[in-house]
Length: 188
View 1: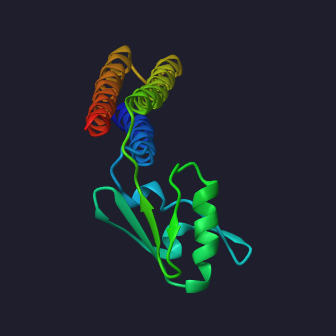
View 2: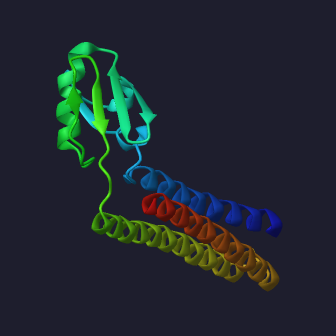
């Protein structure tokens, strides 16, 4: 019986840590590095006939060049609404509308902007690590409670704490790797 409780506790903790890591991964994708990438704009909300709709549901979004994003709306009547939504978003790029498509030309990053982005990346990564540590703390508290309720032996408690610590280290390392990779993208 205790082994299934340990497994359940570990599985729950790992799911929460993985969710934190995935959240950081998605957040990093939205940070502009000077390179064009469709994820920079795919979730921009467009007022499409009175409904806030993600851009990716209204258009084909491609990055044919390193510094260019091309948005091809499926409904040509939505071009102006898409353009307006991009200008109102925090993408920081002025769209060019040719009547059919919208082009976003990504500007070169300045040294100051790169430093700002790196600081933002570190803040985001730290938030993810805090979330992982909070998950560890919560899971360890559950292990202690299970021992007090006589559902865990002392050995079970220490085994689960050890496994939870290993998960914490694994997901913290993954976030550090994501941070390092994103910083490298910004530097080039």
